[in-house]
Length: 282
Ligand SMILES: [Zn+2]
Image 1 (tube, rainbow, N blue to C red):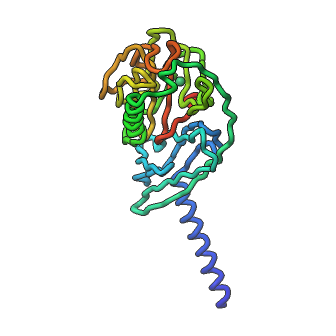
Image 2: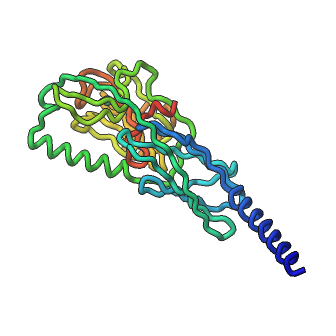
Image 3: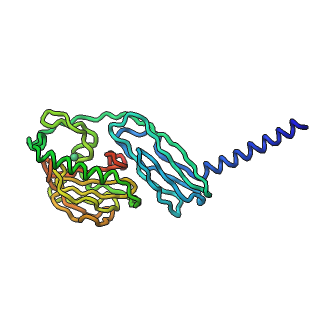
């Protein structure tokens, strides 16, 4: 009798455990590519039950509050730097009925071969004077501080390329300038004759509209949740600091300001402080 009673208690325990664990996992559902190439970015979709009232995502030492909506389905973009060799993880923390849950997800990194590009540039842009070095350092600091800030806006619903034209130089190519190996290409170069209208990648806030040593007239848009798009070598700005622009809105005209061999658009995309290949989203 005693044994039967214990067995019954045990099976009730198992049923309770399964009920609890299924409700735990049914309340949140994450979809994303489990394998990602170096330098690529991707959409991550989070579906949740109506009982979930708060979600945090932690990735690459940064934390974002995932905006919740009526559809119970939120999307964010994550990415991997071109130099990443180790697999990555992200954590989802969520609150449901006053309880907190934490789940870990893994991303496998696949190696990618990046080609080499040989360029010949004026000496000024390869060997820097003390004055230029000082300027470069200062601008790098300003830009990095922007790109590493995670704002709570959620502007990224629809996206588009800033120009529809031929790609001249891909993301990640190793650059050899006047025979010397330099940093890899942290964006995509598009063919864009002088004064070609350049359009916003998505809805975003202008957080930089400034003439930089390398980038020339440079715009940076903040799309929220750690996503920034960057537009370089513009001839003219068609927007200004602090403005919120819509997806597809003309924000500048193409040119060859800064370190450029001719008019083109350098388009960059940054996810939580890392340069990623914008074409991997299209
Ligand atoms: Zn470029």
